[in-house]
Length: 465
Image (tube, rainbow, N blue to C red; front, side):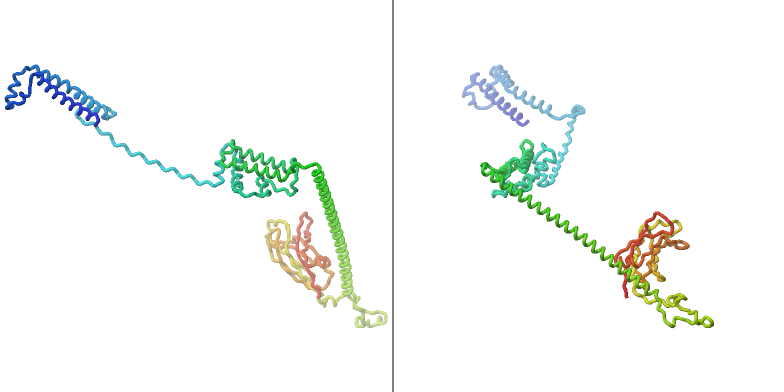
């Protein structure tokens, strides 16, 4: 808009200049001379001009109109252009005589939200992303892990040990000699591993920038292992000598294995013989112990039953049977033994451990179980424990007067009105002597025949005076 106004002003100035030039030209053409401008006063000049022909005035007016016409046209065009460029309301035209409403200011554009920072990835995840998506996730993860594990070896400049190179192909270093045949299973497996690595690091599938370099490193390692562990161009004499040495080593190995097998068999036979000999000695020892215990038992029984005959034991009858009838205390019974028991010959210590698989208590029974341990007239009772597998773990001590007796154990279940017998057992002293100090497990005999298999565990030992 400012450029158009400036252009119109320039055109108007040019028009005025042209008008003045036209008037001057008209005056010159009409015969004005320098003397005309040298008049005495202004009134004289205007009086002289009044005598000229009026056609000159018309010509000057026409020239002025022609020169000012472009300026008027230019100004009108610019004003029309301004009117067209003024914004109008979308609902209709503005009424005449009223100012056009101004458009409301546009709201400021919202500031763009800052993009969230990406989460840091682990080196393994970064390597997996660099591998790309041309392989399945399992192969991509395996390739990324192999690249990361071999990165330190790829960047090394010093030589690498041959035993370490086998680990690059996930194979253990062979312990045999380094003169294997190319068709050996170990070398064939090494070749197959290299082919699998080729599929993982091929540039058409693996987009990692270090994939190609890593595969070239593996190829170099494969070539070194192949040259180091295979035979290279041996002659017939060398091959014959090598085969003879291998055969000799194989025979020595088989001979050594045979000797080891024989030595192992001899050791097994020796152990078997030793086991049989110990079993026989143990059996013989037990037989001798049984015989000795039986002899001691019989001797003690005989000593307790034999009564010595003395003169005081005989009573003479009075009367007519004095010479033919004699009374002896041995014929009247063992009244002295019943009245005066023998002194104890030892002590029996019993540890009652537990009972197992007792029957489920009935409706009117409380379910509490206790045991009664008896030796002759001596008896002890354990505490009451609930359940089908009660554990008492209590100790009792009995005085032993005779060896021809038994240890009796009875298990009872507490009831509302009376106690019920669950089962009982008897262990002879001879059996207790054999298992002295060790756990003994015996079955309880129920008062009525049944399919129950109830067990009582205890430990017992003798201490003889």
